[in-house]
Length: 184
Image (cartoon, rainbow, N blue to C red):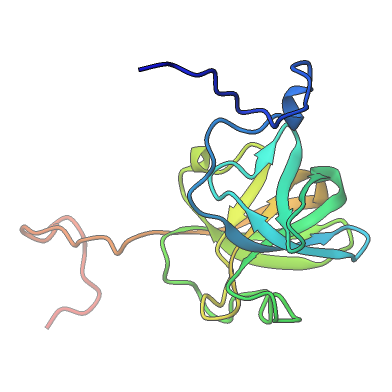
């Protein structure tokens, strides 16, 4: 059997092509639909790799035309992971109407243009990317499933509450040191 020299580079490309233009060794198995809202109110629809969509301070997006676009995080207001591109209003409800039941950090994000959105983040901050915050929106039945907000687009992040699992009551005798208010 004869071995052949196979290259990941397309024919006719010199070997000194910058690393950013070379084809990746592994392609992600799935892509998530996103709508990217820019700071200048423009929006771009496309697909991102869910695990590593931010590379070297830029969002790598495969737009609906099939072109890979790198958008600087400083130009992005928020990235909305959506079910469909057709929905014009990305987030219909931006705040919780009651205390959320999902475990995590209930946060309020304030943008540079004074818009405010709320969401739930994991209680383990190491699960968030260093470039921004990944939150679950107030209405999970809407078109938006998750929201990534770059740190550069925010003026403040406020933790409203830590929502945890219901604590189990201790079993055992009641504390006799506590005076009861209403003795029979």
